[in-house]
Length: 284
Image (tube, rainbow, N blue to C red; front, side, top):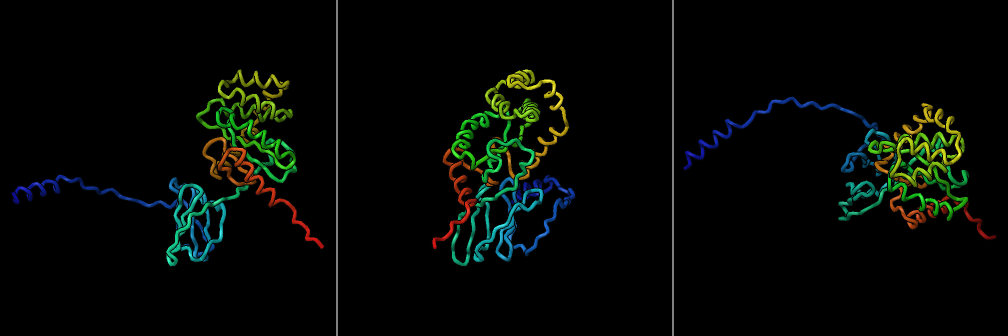
């Protein structure tokens, strides 16, 4: 029996494939740090990198290597572990403690070329990345109008285009809305497109635009203006860089809205309004 086992083992070793492949390591990006790294980790999807430094900071980078932000942390923290896209587990080994923390990044969002609804001087900006064929975006329109009405004069909304490749008419709809913006009718077309999000096609989009009284010949000329296409591409690029993966994605003064409800909007807006309020003078 022992001899038979040895023979079988010898056959298995002889039959085992020999791997002689050459493995190469290709460096894609080098992050130049201001402080000595203590630990480097990433989210499960690899889209965000965290660096815990020796001087007790957490540096947050995008996958492309752009620094998205930094935050000072307790010097007792020895190790960090991502818990999803917004949470971190902070380990304090010497104190035998583990802390769950939420990481909130306030993104810089360019709205200089975005259609704006509301008072342009309002201290709070809702930036929404939308797709005109997205059912969830269409469902969000009434809620957004309620929010703007509740905070009239204090909140404005900026529309950011994020047409998904899976929606064949979304980019054409976005171009039509931007072309309508040239005639001051973006929001009228915006509302009609979302009311008909599930039946859009080229003819339907033109028919909806015509209902608003637009000069259709001018709209068709504006729609092929490469500058409008560049605006959409720029919105997509910016959104992707700051973590937009689907629609609608909403930021309030750059802070990602986690809960798309009146309560969720109210919490973040009230926080931002308190921060924007001038300090109260102390009574004499």
